[in-house]
Length: 291
Image (cartoon, rainbow, N blue to C red):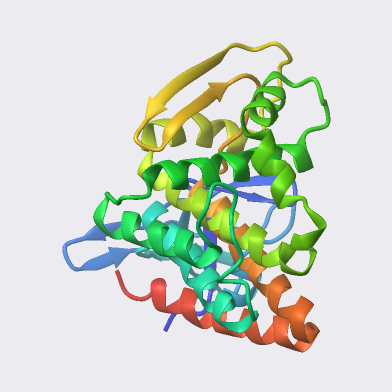
């Protein structure tokens, strides 16, 4: 079982604490991996490789197995993993399903427009497995609420066109989920929203492709930018307008895992949150097994 990893984008670029490091990628040759070139320490320090516990907070578009080389802080990528957008979405659902079993009443909490947290996660799982389902409109509604809630937390300019459009379109759902009655289930609610966002990213890749690069590059928001509205099987989505609005699957998976840990900790204290983290690390390692 590998014990060191590096998360990068598809070009091998690692984003870590404001610094971007380029990693030479390993190459698959028949049934074996040929490691990438060794990366030496530079003026920013040694290349950053992490164990699975730290990786949980640094999930990326791609995840590679790594190893240290020599005793001077050098490292290289030695193999790919099965990690992908569908795997990231599946991991998000795994985390949420697990914590809904732990937090009493969370699975039965009702969502705007009908249905429960447990039912929406079951619908998301069905869609991820089959690429179809009977609840696509509700999944779309919940995913747009998730995007609008994240915009509310992240936006520094209330006049941002994308934020305003999202809140106007989904305002009722936002208000319902902000009701004090949700206070004790806040983390579980947010975990579900993040997981559904992860599945949306897989279900609607043409939206994902337009947003992922902007998200990674942290492009400056531009007030008044044009918004395109696109009809999809999940309903109508707005794209553009100074985003990013739709978090990549790996970002949503990271958020779903974090909120799931918070939900357990809210119920039974920090020890329960740590127990949930240990379970998540084990599940992540299973998913990153030999490709």
